[in-house]
Length: 187
Figure (tube, rainbow, N blue to C red):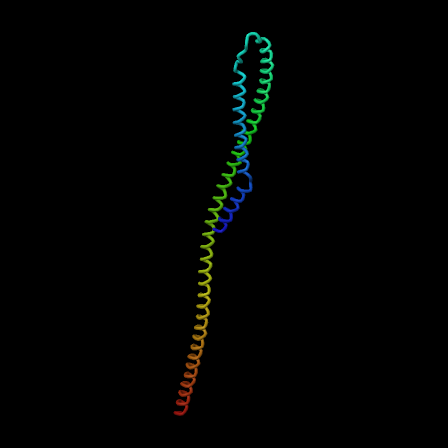
């Protein structure tokens, strides 16, 4: 249980220190910049499609100036469009990398959860083993006490048997002497 807590804290530290949140924030900023660029491109395009109202007297000179302005604006627009395409491609690559990283982190998170569950299960098993060892220890101590007690009883029994045997032998000797003396005295 303590290991699960430690693993969870380490995972949170890993998420905080990996900079994913910062990278995600940068990607959001780049998306906003891309949106601004697209709106600027759209305004430039709409400006380019507008036809200026020209006095017929100066129409030819104005048209030459307009053509130069248009060419310049078209070049700016093309340059801006190229920059926009490059930025879009970079942002898309970065977003994909962030998605892969998020996916990998989800996978790692699932692995940590599974490891935590296994640690929890093993913790319960270890608790059961520890309880069984304690019970076995108590039973061994009880068994040792009983073996010592049985040994004492056996020693007392041997003593009693020896004393009883000694009494029987002494009684047999006394009876044997009495019989011997009584049969010898009658002869």
